[in-house]
Image (spheres, protein in one colour):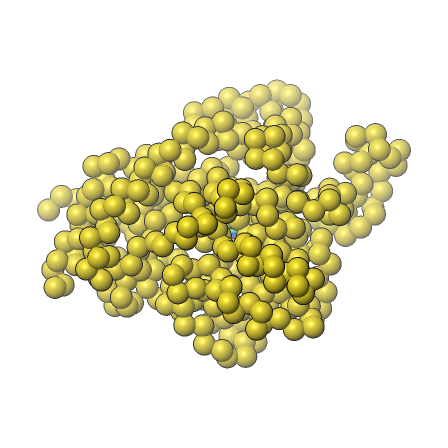
Length: 381
Ligand SMILES: Cc1ncc(COP(=O)(O)O)c(C=O)c1O
C-alpha cells in the first residue's frame, strides 16, 4: 500500500516575504501602521473598493472592534450561527452580549435566514453573518430583516477572501466585516486579520479604538495638535513585519486563487459520483454565491462513517479534519443555553469533514485522496 504524507494544510509562501520584512526593518519603523500596513490598506481600498480597512492582529480582534463600534452593552442580544468559530460569539460576549444562536441551513452551514426573524427581541442589536467556506450568506434577506428591525449586520468573512454575493464582494455588504489572515487561510501572515468599515459613521472611531483609544492616527495625519486618550480601545494594530509578510501574499492573490479553485473543482467533480449514490453530500453553492477555494468539505451520513473515513485516510498518510463543534453545546455556553435543538448545526458538527486543500497540493495527491475516499466507501457497500 502506497503511504503518503499529506497534511491538511500547508501555508502558502510567495518567496518575497523575507525581502519585504527586511525592507520594513530597514525603513526604521516596524511598529503598527507603517509602510506595509498602508500598502495592504491601499490594496484592499483600491482593488477591492472597500471603503475603509484596518489591519488587525487577527479576525478575532476585528470582531472585537466591531462589538465596541456598535456599542454592545450588557443584555444586548446578537444573533450568531451556532456552527462557527468561537470568536464569532466571544467578541460580543466580552462586551456583555447575550448570544442568540441560530441554526444553519439544510443545504449549507450558513445561517438559515428563515429562522432569523423569529429570534429577534427588543434587545437584539446585530446579526453576524458567517460566510462558511467562503460561500456567501443570503445577504439580501439578512439586510432586509436588519433594516426592518434597525439592526447592524456584521460579516464574519474570516474565510471569505475573494468571494462574491450577486457580484458584490463579501466584506463590502454589512456595516462592518472581519477577515482572517491566519496561516490556514488563502492568504496569510501567520496570525492576522482586517476590519472593513463600510458605514461612514464608524470610520473615525474605528481608528481611535484601533490605536488603544487614542487619537494617535489623527495626530500623525495633522488633524489634531494633541495626542490624547479619547475613548476605549486596545492594541488592535499588527506590527508592520506582519503587514510586510501579508503584502507579499496579496501580490499573488490571483495565482493563489487560481490554484485553490482548481483543487476545489477537482474534488467537486470527482467526488460527485459518491454524492449521486447518496453516500456523501458535497458543497451546495447557491446561485447567488461564488466559491473561493478556501476549503473543501464533504458531509458523511453519520459520525461513525466520518470517524471511519478519517482513520482510513490517516492510515494512508492523509490528514482530514472535522470542523466546528456547535457553540450552543460548548462547555462554556451549554449552561447558559435555553435548549432549542439546532438540528442542522449539530449535523455539520457531527458529520462534516474537510479534505486537504493547500496551494502546493499536486493533482497526483488530490487524485490519491479522491481514490482513497472512494475505496473507503466501496469497502463499506
Ligand atoms: C468563521 C471564523 N471567524 C473567526 C475566526 C477567527 O480568526 P482568527 O484566527 O484570525 O482570529 C475564524 C478562524 O478560523 C473563523 O473560522
